[in-house]
Image 1 (spheres, one colour):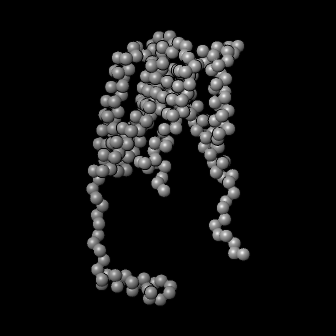
Image 2 (cartoon, rainbow over the protein chains, first blue to last red):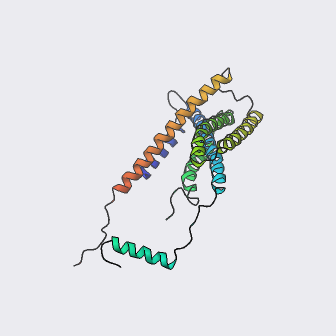
Image 3 (cartoon, rainbow over the protein chains, first blue to last red):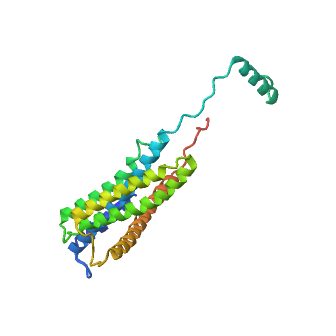
Length: 94
Length: 154
């Protein structure tokens, strides 16, 4: 990862400092600046749309009613449950 | 450990990208810029195009959400909010950047087509760069020798 980073940093510093046959270093810097503005606007626009949808979904999810809960098992129900489990699982009544 | 998409870690996904972009812009600024008078127009065009297209895609997704969660007004609210924000962005862009026309594009339709093509190019470039980063990261992770779970008894 560091190798790629250094490689691209080196390429960047080269193209923004050396004049080529087709473009000058200043033109290259201008193009890179304009492309940076493009990328910045693109990412910001996508994030803004995602943020709005996330806000709406969060609002609706918070307004959902609580799921129905059941009361805790009574002692008789627990004993019945243990009995059925013990009868149907391998290993006896434990 | 909290997942990467949790509230506490989401900046980890966004901050490196903006950080690299800001470093690039700072380096360019320090080395000196040429004619960049159209940079705000480019920014506004990119912002409006990406917002419009992603808002349209997400609005379709909101219909599925409304269907599955039985909340029929959710897409209406989302579309209304997105239209309002889009309107504010458009009026602000027109107010501060002017006519938003670039590179001698004569009509708004030509500019819209130009913006969509440019958006496709930028998203392709980001996808390629992201694939490179992910591939490198996974190859580095999987190249490690697995640590033994238990030390053998001597």
